Amino acid sequence: MKKLYWFILIISLMNIILSAAAYGKSQSHQSNMCALQCDAVLSSSYSKVLGFPVALLGVISFTLLALVLWYILVFKSPAAEKILLAFLIAGFIFAIRFLYLQAFVLNAFCPYCVVIDTSTVLAGSLYFYSESRKYRSKIARFARLANCTKSSKINAICYYMKWRK
Image (tube, rainbow, N blue to C red):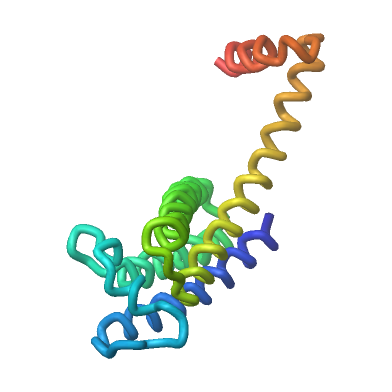
């Protein structure tokens, strides 16, 4: 799990730099900012959330994510892991949304945005996969304890929840 935290921290630091670059390009007000269609993406109506540029929100959120990861790596805090999960869920949802908007609504791709969103989806997916493996083994163990069949794994989960109380 520690390797995964380091990997997500590296992605987070990379995304801080890319978000800052995208924010700088969006504030420069120059047309044809890059060879690909950055102008169409960074100046669209979807580039702001509640009046704030998405790139600036990316810098802030990835900085907070990096701080939470650093806190987890240094202090091994279970409470911080819940905050990490919330950040990764929100980031995963927003990244999927932004990739969808670029592909199907704007029909334009900004390389900064694509790399940021793709790496966020990758980090979230890896974390969710590693967490699901942890819970799958617990459910399987309690299914064996309850002597359940595959069709009654839901009963094993219920048994587990009652047993914990």
